[in-house]
Length: 180
Image 1 (cartoon, rainbow, N blue to C red):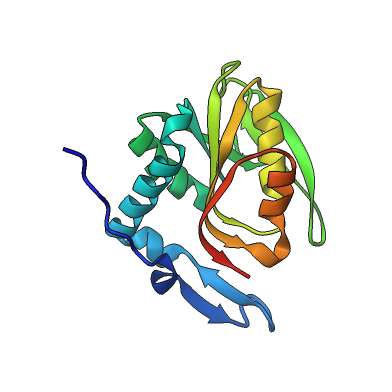
Image 2: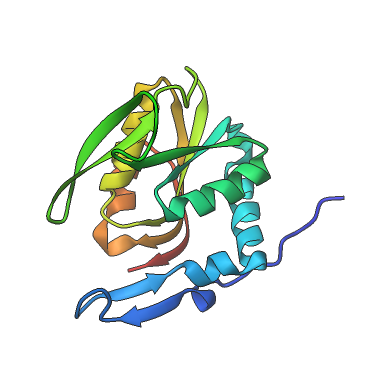
């Protein structure tokens, strides 16, 4: 018997905080979604419905809220979870990618033994904004010989065009809630 997951309106669970972290910003807080077992199950089930046929070998989570999403997906997909972290946070041999952020640049890294050549990796995060971190994550996966099966985001800030950037690079992008 196949169980059907009832549709949840995640926008009703995501809380909005005006003027955080600075005036003029509307911060959309995904933490209430993570605290809600039914919402986490819904996210895992829905991303499995969208990506299940892709035969994903591993889920990569982008630091730090992406770890929550990636772990839920890894459990659903029956795979392991790979951490993509800020530089200096992983032990052992790593590879690094720098990328531009609003006021400078940042560096992400992955352990060089995380991915086997040819593995299909679904990259997960809580939010896609300008796409810089996601692009860096895709380059790390590919440098290790993995194939990006797609991106799974809980929230997409469409006005910042990060998802569009990924799509133009040929990646599949799925977002649960899209804000303009």
